[in-house]
Image 1 (spheres, one colour):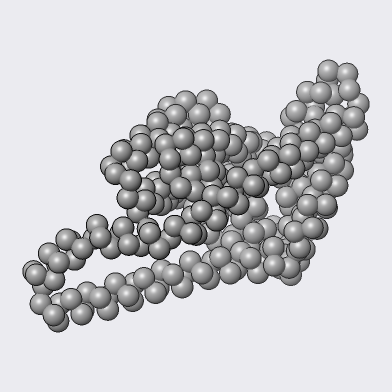
Image 2 (cartoon, helix red, strand yellow):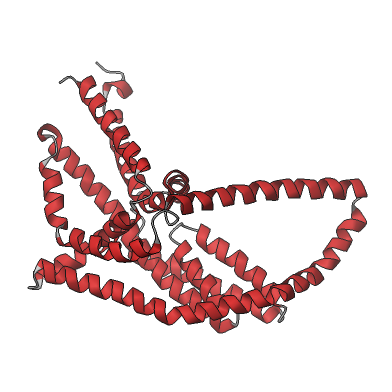
Amino acid sequence: MTSVQRVRFWLIGAVAFLLLLWLLRGVLLPFVAGMAVAYFFDPLADRLERAGLSRTLATGIITLVFFGFGAVLLVLLAPVIQQQVISFVQRVPGYVDTLVLRAAPLIEEVQHRLSAGDIERLRASVGGYAGTVAGWGLGVVQGVLTGGLAIVSILSLLFITPVVTFYLLRDWDHLVAKVKALLPRHHAQTIREQIAEVDRTIAGFVRGQATVCLVLAVFYGVALTVVGLDLGLVIGALTGIGAFVPYVGMLIGLVISMALAIAQGTGWGLVGGVALVFLVGNVLEGNFLTPKLVGDRVGLHPVWIIFSLLAGGALFGFVGILLAVPLAAVIGVVTRFALSRYLTSELYSGNR
């Protein structure tokens, strides 16, 4: 087989894999979620196995504790979240009145300085941009829901994911060994090195960043509730989860929290409290959590992560979001490997 034929073979295989992924995106969610959980806890299972437990027992303990803890947490938090949501909905008219009252001086100043024609053009421009942004946001959300939870029911996600997690985590080392045994012998060592680099990148970011998100979700949820922000637990938890996308989650949470704090109309003390919470959270994340748990050598630029998540969500729904970072890591490692080969090749140096 010539080099051109080998390249053609792998390209056809990659296209077929992506096409199959796109066709089956509606039923893959519990399997991809189970694979993600199994990958996350594989080091813990190895540690328990080295401590003397069988792989099956270690896997059973991890699966039971993880999903059992999630179920208990959901049962405990559901009434609190429900109460905060109901209270928030009831107070929405008051929020609107407060915002209108606070914005009245600014609106009067704008009307005084601008002509009627300028105001109309400004209103049309703002309306057009707002419609565009809203349409884009709704399109992304619709794509995520259509590709994931709308087709795969919540029950299948809840009941199938633990089963998939158990079997994948139990057989993880055997699956990895079988994949390595199928590698082309001539390039097996090179491919293993690149796979190890991909694993290091994914482990450094996914496992580390997931831990960061968990800590921040607890911190923001508790802190915003303590300072008195309505819907503080929900906003704080979503802010922590959103920290998986560097900077974006924190900024969105800050804007929403500050706007809600102003709308509550309880004075600037609440606004200052919310600002202090996010300041402490940002310092905690930037100086302690991220350097200790993620590090600075994962090789995934924040812009690349944001793009991969948006592209994955638009193409494959929620399944695409789960697969975005691993695929981004693979593409990043392959690209760096290709560039290193290019810089040592005759194509770059011009030598023959």
